[in-house]
Image 1 (cartoon, rainbow, N blue to C red):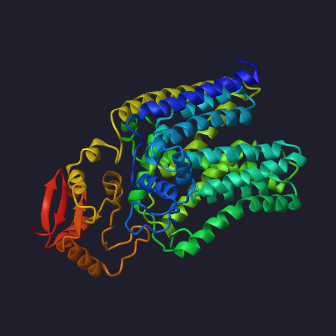
Image 2 (cartoon, helix red, strand yellow):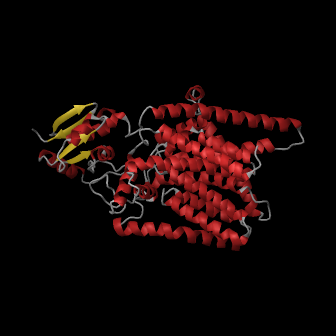
Image 3 (cartoon, rainbow, N blue to C red):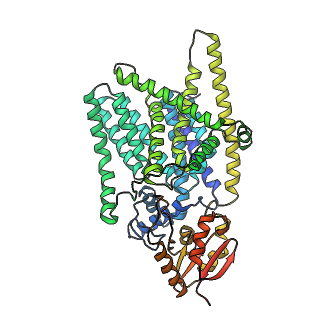
Length: 526
């Protein structure tokens, strides 16, 4: 293995370039697109048009508060070159993935003082099909992960630097945390991680309070400015309302399924293991118990005995962040946003930390010295077994993912939407005809006009009944019958019975002018 730092940086750079190339190779038809993707793209277009950060995909065109501005701002900056944000997100995420691969290598190198481990960690991210898929989606998670990793490195450098130089790294970590918050509100978990770490890792209360004050001084101005903007323009800070709605069993099962796919990425292997009752539940519980035990042991020892050896910073904050982030999304699901699910993109930041810790514990096994020859060889064998499994399963699933992505666009970028006859019908409507739809995001994407949301019985964010449903239905039907609007319902047959009953209420008394491929469009009577 090379001893030259320059050669090591070049190797990491080549891995990073490989990551960028692979994202571009996997997305010849562009990024995967979903509802939030259209929100970010439309927000970026609104910024470019000089109208501010607004809901341009909706007819209401209100100031955006539900989504922080970070990702849309980056797309808008790229858009200054003349590249539309829809296309620009492909190049942004490709560059971000390369940067994340590079920083993963730096984290592994710094965490273990081994360049070889840095290369292995960078390669592990490069070949991880789950996280690769996240980076091929036009969402804010890749940028959020980039800012998180950068903040981790800055925070570790704060503890490694001499006192006179350390403050600038603490401020850098706090500013990066603020940017992460302005990319995803889950950045509050990153803030909590660093504040708790400062209290645990510093030996005196004076140092704890001083460093906390400095960190907050870097974070608060950015977060406060965004909150004030929201209050002034939209009369709310983040478009979240405090309402208790317990996490559903289905959502919990989705989280367990996604974790199983991350830990056992090869579907055939996972299907065989799924035949063992509660195996994945038990495995998830064991992983979290081990991490929590290790974290409490290291953290409490340092806090109770400040003179004790400081834990390795990057591994410590990675473990602490997993629990901080998990607490953040659990509280969001329970009290602020009932529509949040344990989807891959939501849990991806925890997967990043889990990969870091997997390599750290693997390195610990490799370097473990023991008077017992049996323990020594058992540790080495365990290390090799974990390494072979991790890289073999990652490579197999990555190859499968790459092949699948190359076949065509995902989500709203798929042929189902691109070749939709319903979209062709809507595009032929006069410009002044409004489009009420259950899919306002693709309507905006493929017709280049904002959509109108449907009246609904339940607010998906709060889980509470909406008011004035009947008035909304009457207003929609009056608009359609007057020829000023149409009702476009997509993929009707796949919806559950409750949703379909709402569609029937909305369409009652309207003329079914289009009915193909599971899509229906209602107009005034001819």
